[in-house]
Image 1 (cartoon, rainbow over the protein chains, first blue to last red):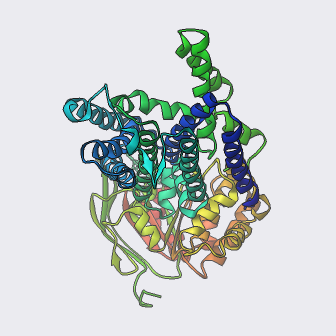
Image 2: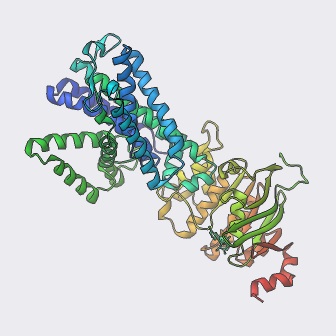
Image 3: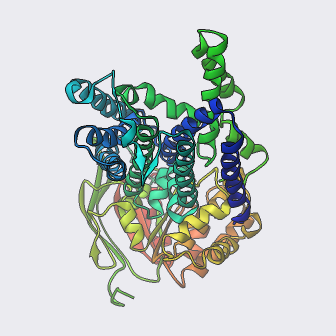
Length: 314
Length: 241
Ligand SMILES: Nc1ncnc2c1ncn2[C@@H]1O[C@H](COP(=O)(O)OP(=O)(O)O)[C@@H](O)[C@H]1O
Ligand SMILES: [Mg+2]
């Protein structure tokens, strides 16, 4: 067994650096990084299913949006406090993931991708259809006064960064614990050779459902936190773009690595950010970077590092 | 022991599997008793792999029943049969090619360990039994074919099965490796019942306590090695007469 010391040390160091950045980053990057940390949590959730279990979903916007709206709708319409709405959003996403999983997992491969895509589209269209309550594409803003947890206003930039960091840290540590656990090893076994895992006596269907529920809950937590931290709830987050993005982030950073999702999300966010300063065709720049990476680092940034130098990386 | 000393560990009744118009396994009644090393032989395409696929639950039957340890397991999925004490090694080598040998075997061990205690020791012990302990850190996909077959067997042993099903385990092994394999199976037979599909008649004759011959999906003959060796029908099936 690889010792636990190296991975635990590395991940603790990354969290320490992220905390240190809070004190030194200029305002602009401080704000960008808070957003990156929130979206990286979304990517971490996606990675559980795609990177570790080998299930390629094209519908994860559904779970992010479930958390976002699960928090936003009751806050907006029922006057719920954030303390109640946040766990509700996460639970709602987990419940939805259970339902989607139970149905979508009857299919495999391309059919699975299509079915998850269709579920997400159905969710997106539902949001547009109930435009009267959801405000559809236009979305709605959660009032600043309501955006506080235990008396701390998350509209404040400092509190927001720390909250995003805590969210990310919890998701990252949960991922680390899961993938190093016996259940996590079974997920990897399913990714590597599903038939073999089944013939070793593992209930593959149950483990896949576990992966999709854990993944949905984590993505839902990211969505709910996004609403709370940035105060905006809109149907764009349920669109197909937000199903593709976590896939790209994870592919860029390294599927099946714990830190890959953060690296991929940060890389792509800054690429688009810098690119849009240079040219209007900034998506072209992002596309070119993706093509180059696929050609020269197919395992993603951290995936290549693991392959070449650091086989112990979880 | 949950099975009465006299009862069969595994039993099939009228077990049948059709693929379209082809009947690959044709109403087979079969009994296997605890402690046996049973060889299952027959020409290519006789239905041997399909038959053990029906036993293990990889392939659903068209008709018939399977009982294991006195329990009707016909409707149980494969993973539940493995959890009840079957282990299965594939005819076409199927290991976790991107994982280390250690991780391959650890996956076979960990399912029956409640708290993961002893995982490392048991994993290494299983690798040691097939002579691969020194390669525990290597990636399974980098092994030679023969070593991959041995790794498969280690994964089977690591499950501590009541019934170990081996589908042509000596295919692709060198003569030296085959001798080692024979010793290993004799050793395993003290703890588990072994059902062995095998083409190498030397291996069959020296290992099997009893032999079942399958031909065109049906049970053609069954008996101890001497009786099968002398059986005229078996000779015909093999010689195509
Ligand atoms: N999945 C399948 N679909 C169609 N035919 C099959 C399938 N599996 C096996 N068969 C056929 O069933 C017969 C028995 O095959 P098999 O059980 O592999 O024989 P053996 O292991 O004795 O060589 C063969 O004629 C084979 O072509
Ligand atoms: Mg065969």
